[in-house]
Image (spheres, rainbow, N blue to C red):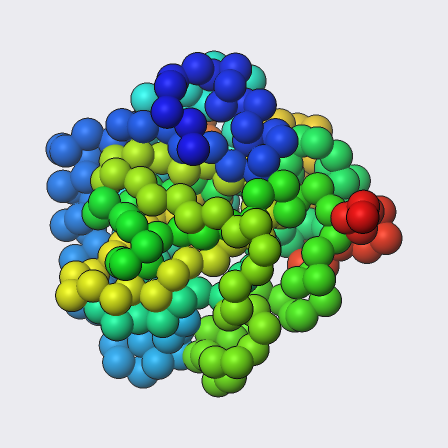
Length: 285
């Protein structure tokens, strides 16, 4: 884990290992506002939905929660990403993921949905996640775990199914290999307000929440170097972001104005491609 604040070092770790941790990116005021939004969202999340998302915990998109705009457009985080060399960043959506006490571990998965774009096979991620945890995390309450560098090669997990399907979200089969331990996995405990930045192509999961308290993360999906993506990829991000946030007020949208994708062409949106092809090399022996 990164313990010193060096944009160059952070950028190198993100590029090579697939993740980095940036300390103290959300202050107490921002965390408090976000927690209030989460409390409201969870109160509207019914029991039937909880059963459908037993493994991850809640999966609540930002569609109806413009209160998340302050976190999404957090100037300190955006400035730091810029110092790391990440430019032309555009937003897709944010997700409230809250694991209740006793919630099981999350399955291993990678979230890239654009394996049809050549950028997915380069050293420049087409899609990254920003994770803000609202509580201090540790193994006991379900901290993040990941397979560092798994964004650079084809892993056996690539052949075990796609992320977020109904059966694996419900945890129909607790013996599914995607819930198991794997060699060289790394725990990533953080403090509330720290920021985990990760490559969407990297396999990640969580431990179970064996504590008596809720453990919540806000995951934000960004697309750096947006204009360098294929036109159909840009077209999809443009349309998806607008469709999901069409009810947001002008004030909320203003807080994320630099992040709003704006594709001007007429190429139809891409088809989602969740699995890499032969262009992703297998791990060398």
